[in-house]
Image (cartoon, rainbow, N blue to C red; front, side, top):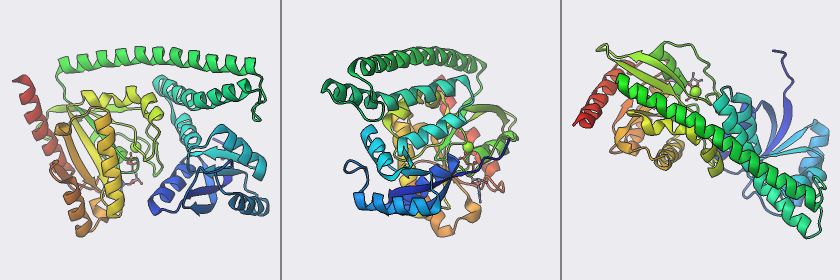
Length: 363
Ligand code: GDP
Ligand code: MG
């Protein structure tokens, strides 16, 4: 691949360590070079999404430093995006668009591509609806300048395209549940790895399945599920699956679009919830609760969750103790996916949990 020169961006994010770190990670995962970070207490306000004074400052800095793009770490309306672009003369990307771009560049399977397309159309729909409203009032939306008829046609076309993609995804999903029935017939337990991106899922997956797969420090390297057979210490077999990474403030329509991939979790016999226990305790807590929320949204019972506290090699005793306290009643195990500490015990724990669950199923 020809190395592409990274686009320099100015990132406007929240005055919050966690939010801003995640936003920088997202921008980098999308292939940008974050040249400047502007912190604001509040985003999305006014016609520009940021205050006019801040916009003016950024405009001046941009011309000196050759920034090409501005990323706003919040969802903006199409008119805010348009007006901000006009005002400061840079390409404007909001948080939703940034996440979509990452998804798009990472989608490899036919299903992932359909899901990305659906998420993109869902992103465009409210914006197209706004355009319809404006055109009915006789105003032309600046961005496209389309008249009422054209805007209406576009809106309908979007809806039609969305329903056709949903149909196709439905078919893929049907095939998928068929696979699950087959797996159940084979009686091989199915174990899913979930958790925040960067928690170490792929590292553990590779160690367990001895598979060399891309490991990255980026958010979202894993979009589609990969499943491999793993042999446990007692020579029994499981199917282990590496899944999508979670992020905070992910819009509901995106979870909706990726539901068919995430739905796999519903069928899993055991869910390994990976937590990076080396991070500051409050960040560990935010991510952990968000993961539990998502699992709950996906109707995954906590009775089949085993929490894996990862990165023990670079975590202090104090942090590990805090993490254990956070996890509370759910079963947990401390490991280092990187150096392998605790991974044998993990396999034994998997065997044990499956035994209990599968026996309960038979009765
Ligand atoms: P995923 O997004 O959850 O799949 O996370 P990855 O497996 O891609 O890991 C993200 C980063 O964390 C990589 O740089 C890994 O090398 C690193 N990592 C994963 N597990 C460990 C661990 O146990 N200890 C340390 N120190 N780093 C780890
Ligand atoms: Mg991964």
